Image (spheres, rainbow, N blue to C red):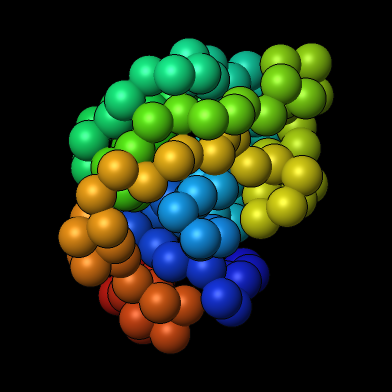
Length: 127
């Protein structure tokens, strides 16, 4: 199971890649492995504001539907529309082509609760 370096993580297995005041968000390799084959993704609406740990999206697999929580407070600036027709991108490349949305960060303090790759890897060992 891969943990990408240079990203930030939550205990709920979301990741965020920071670029200035924008965060690209997705689910981790661990999360997509647990879900199995992803068959549908319900993406957030562009322009919608989310607080930390609010339900951002839903990822459905052949096993179950799983909520994706917002790792940082912000407004949705862009969604990965490719997932509407190719949800399997989350299984194939969760850290790149399988990203869910981009958020314009509205509260930089919300970044303080995120983990670096090393801390997330340590957490995975406890599961």
